[in-house]
Image 1 (cartoon, helix red, strand yellow):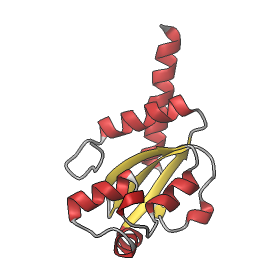
Image 2 (cartoon, rainbow, N blue to C red; image 1 turned 135 degrees about the horizontal axis):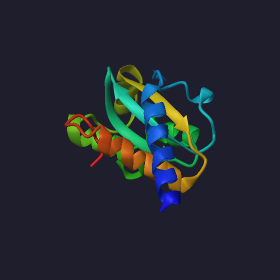
Image 3 (cartoon, rainbow, N blue to C red; image 1 turned 60 degrees about the vertical axis):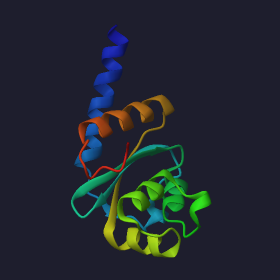
Image 4 (cartoon, rainbow, N blue to C red; image 1 turned 135 degrees about the vertical axis):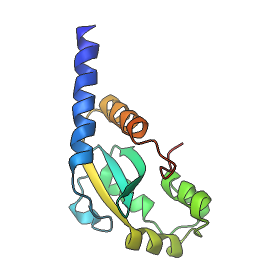
Length: 131
């Protein structure tokens, strides 16, 4: 039981740390680590997406891809459903001009999943694209 309490406490601290980070330009993928982590995507001042990845740099590049709907990320699919923004270059431009990113490196896959779940639960609003 003590181990579970420690795990939950660590995950809670990670969520608070993630939400305390200043978001930056989502298009600056070169500055992102190629390591695992959890990210927040903001539209203006509001979190619209919480995600996790084994390689943050690659995952954000996928979110920014100009590719068509058959290879679309969950973020882009949800954004399309909410806004009707067409897939491809128009969506890429929308994301690059309106969104910012904050992230926290989290190496352990189980901890990433827990941090993502807690962050979604904590910030569940109508604006959040996560289901």
